[in-house]
Every structure is written in structure tokens, then in C-alpha cells.
Amino acid sequence: MLNTYSDPQRERSYEYFNFFLTLQKMGHEVELFDYMADLGALGKSGMNQKLLARVQEWQPQVAIFSLYTDQFDVEVINALRQYTKTFCFFHDDTWRVDYSRYWARQFDFFSTPDIQGEIKYHEIDLPNAIYFPFGCNEQLFTRQNLTKKYDVSFVGGWAPYREWLINRIRKAGINVHVVGYRWPAGEVDQDQMIQVFNQSHINLNLSNSASWDLRYLVSSPRALLNRLRNKKSIEQMKARMFELNGCGAFQLSYYVEGLANCYAIDREVAVYADADDLLEKIRFYLAHEGLREQIATAGYQRTLSEHTFSKRFQHVFDRMGLADE
Image 1 (cartoon, rainbow, N blue to C red):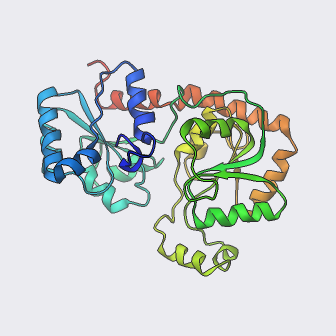
Image 2 (image 1 turned 180 degrees about the horizontal axis):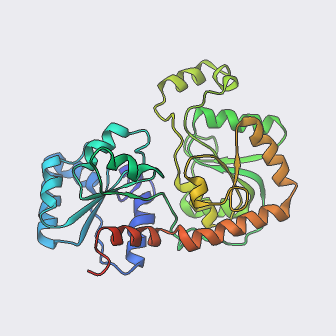
Image 3 (image 1 turned 135 degrees about the horizontal axis):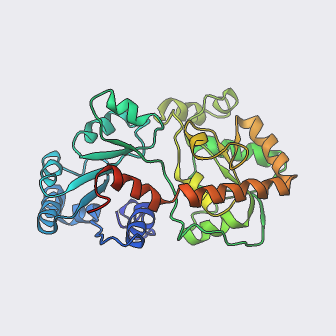
């Protein structure tokens, strides 16, 4: 999608900023096929036929997909493989399991953010999974050395559990600057978000998975209902971990399997175990500026050396046999 959720009133999409611009910066000839815009203009069949015709005409080395729901026809996706190699992103395969496994069979190669994902897919006769956690576009997410103006900040969409955590922090007397979709202060654009990262002593990276914390569940009827309805019961690596470190910003993050494979815990990223530990860690790191800066700098250096999207894509192209083409 060209725009976030294909809404022309919103800014460019995550895929545009991080995938499309990275591929251009790497020197590749790359074309964005805005399938959601064409879906609205041409209908599902028309959009799929337009895609097939374009690939037949151009025959690119690779066609890269970031799926949403059921916009594509299986027959068309498989027909593309006569003219190009195909690669599909699965960012949420830890909880969209059936969806990811079904569509994975339709592509030559596909990604998984799960540290054990390649093994799991291989066991169900899907050998072409490529471990691809999120990363950052280092051309956009930069260390700006701005004056710190926020003790603690959080940038991200509203969720009931996140609201409960923020309220607990504020009740403990700690100021938290919060912006994002459905929060009272509203959304910020990408440039403003990066400024907040750089202007905060502590950047919170809060899970949006539903929690079984009893205090949260009894906090309101909505909390229990959300826990029962929410399919996101498994933590996963999110882009924010890499974006914050790519800005040289100190982050205090939830823990997720695979994080220790990317960053050294307590040396390149700080993590909290639960709601109580979150409060204690905030108090501790606010009182220890030197340690915050040491961790933030180490995480920044690790990001630039290993976790940029240009390095991620080069690994994918190597695995797909495209490196020398």
C-alpha cells in the first residue's frame, strides 16, 4: 500500500518508508504496485489481472508482497512464478498461523519473524522460509542529539492493556508523554515520532498483546472482554524495537523470544518483566543517566551493524539466489 491502511488522508505506509525506499537506496530499480488503490478502482479481478499483466511485461527479478487479507487470487499469484521469483512477508505468523501457512505455499520464498520459524515451516514441508525480523531504515531513523524534554514517552496505537499500564505509571507520579492512534493527544507523523524518540529520556515499547495480569482483568469489564476476544496472545518482535535503537534512543521494552538474538539484554536494550517491574525499571533508569546513554549507544551501534533493512534484504536476495543477477 502506498498510504497507511490505503487511506489517502494518512501518510505513506510502513512498507513505503521502510521497504520501497530502502530498495531504491540500495540502487535497485523498484516499482510500487498499490494493490489496495487498484482494488478500489478496478475490483479484485481487475486488480489481479493488472498485476499479472505488469509482471508479464516487465519480468522483474523478484516480486515482493506484503499481504493484508484476501485481496489476491491464488491462481494469479502462482501464475506470476512463470515470469519472476516471488517473496512474501509474513509479519504476524506467530498468531495468524493458518493464514500464513496457507499463503506461504503460494510463493517461492517467504519471511518469518519467529526465531524458530524456519525450523517450524520446514517440519510442515515448507522449506523456503527466511528468518526476517523487523529492522530499520537508517536513512530515516537517525540519532539527532536533541535536548531531552520528556522523562518517559510512548508512541503507538491505543490498546486497553497499554492504557492500563500508562495509567499505573502516571498514578505512581511519573510523567508520560503519549501519542498515537486513538490516544487523546492524537497521532504524529513519522518525523515527529522520530523527534519524540530523540527527545525522551526513556522510550517505552509496550506490548499490544492481551494480558492475563489479574489486576488488569479486574480493572474494568472492557479489560476482561478484550482479553477473551484478542487473538494476539503471543508476543512478537515489532519494528519499534529496531526503530528506537536506530535513533540511538534509550528504550525499555517488553521481552519477547528472539529479542536476545538481536540485542544483548541490559547492555543494548532494557526490558521489563511485568507491570511492577516496569515501574521499578522506569524509576531506576531515570536515576541513572550514564547507564541509559551507555545502553542506548550500544543498541544504536548494533542496529547500524546488523539490523538495517538493507542488510535484511541483502540476506533475502542471497538466499533466493539473486545476489549476482
